[in-house]
Amino acid sequence: MEITVNGVTLSYTVHGSGDPVIALHGNGEDHHIFDRLVPHLATAFRVYAVDSRNHGRSQRVADVSYDAMTTDIHAFITSLDLAPVHILGFSDGAIIGLLLAIRQPDVVNRLALLGVNLSPDDFTPATRDWIRREYEKTRDPRVGLMLEEPHIPLDAVRRVAAPTLLVAGEHDLFQPEFFPRLRDAMPNARLRIMAGHTHDSYIIRQDCLAPDLLDFFGA
Figure 1 (spheres, rainbow, N blue to C red):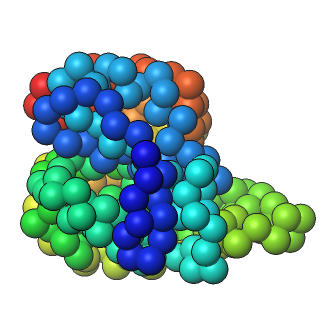
Figure 2: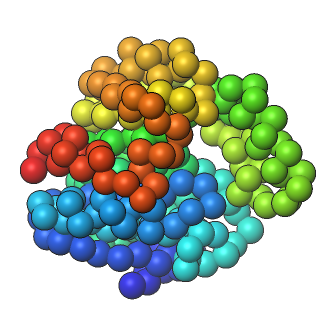
């Protein structure tokens, strides 16, 4: 399916019935990263799996910023009259979900933020070096985005009242102290560390989070 919002055409799929869950993928991916997970969620929820601008089948445009992608998703939710929604965001999708909860708290019910970060400084030095090399090799503006954004102040997340599930891999891309600090800053958050997993191994082609997410979203 397609919808034009905020001047850009977004591709998305819809599965199941019930309260809406918006599934937002990571950088350079598309909604198919949730293919194993969506059937589980769709037993209790209506899941909208969206391709962000410049990803998947959605429109290619010049602006690749998190601000623009967040505005897209807010317009998507508003145009389809879905609010309030649960957000399932992975990596870039988690950043979008967090920004949405900060800026438009009325449209967000619960937040599941998988592999989120507040700043490029949250990456380990080795990860930043790897991203920099990838950008120098590809000049892909989506890769460059991770070196420049986001810039979410810790004080801003203190205002997020929505119940939040933070998920991180034991061997994630970010400095180990980051996730406990973020959990402690958010007034209604809990943290799940996925033992033995990397940044994406617990989500890409896996459904091991399905019971946690069904329970968290209130199935």
